[in-house]
Structure formats: C-alpha cells, structure tokens
Image 1 (cartoon, rainbow, N blue to C red):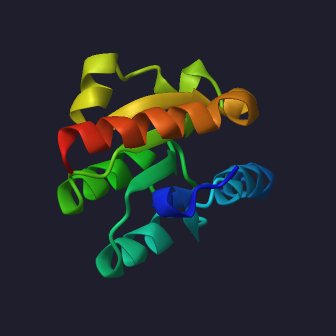
Image 2: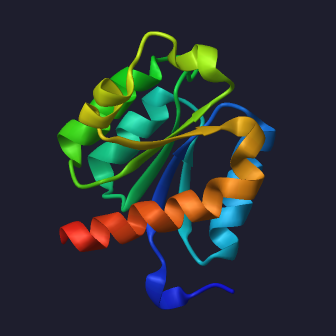
Length: 134
C-alpha cells in the first residue's frame, strides 16, 4: 500500500525497457516519483536540474560506464543513496565491496532478483538515509 507522505524522488537509469518498466512500476506502486533516464547522458542532464532521494543505476549503460555516472551522482548529490543493477556477477568482476561502498553504492541488485527484492532494498536505503539525517 503506497504511503504518499513517504514518497521520494527516484532517478532510474536503465537501458533495458522491460527492466525499467518493472522497476518503475514497483516504485510507483509504493507512491514514489520515478524520473527515468535511458542512458548516462540523459541522467547527467537530469542531475543538473533536480535533486533525487535515491538512484537506481544500471552498472553498464550503453553510452557511459555506470561507475562514471555513479561518481557524478556522488559528487553532485552526495546524500543520494545508490542501488546498482547488474546482469550478473561478471558485471562487477573488477570491483570489490570496499570500492563500491566508497563510490556511494549501498546495494548491488542482480536483475533476475529485482521483482522479489527491490522494495526491501529501497526501504533499507531510505531508512539508512533518514538515520544519517540527510
């Protein structure tokens, strides 16, 4: 059941249309406002004009490395928690957990598990942000 008073602004960066629709639907059903960017260029433009409470970012968007975009988010909006979506563990082969945490990534979510775990991950990220007072 959506809670309008808990509505947050979510930046969603995902090139897979089916995945972005699934994520958007779940978040909107919870009353969140989802702003969609299909690729990094569009996301960078959105970041210049809006502040987001949460970002859900594909690690390997077609036009820009997801880690570069994540760095931009953490630089421009450091209090915005970031959830990364990946196709599988190979997407993160060169990155360890400490590096990801330093970049502001609070959770890595395999796309195959989005439907069953997305809302819990979002709730935890927003709870942690509230505790931090940001």
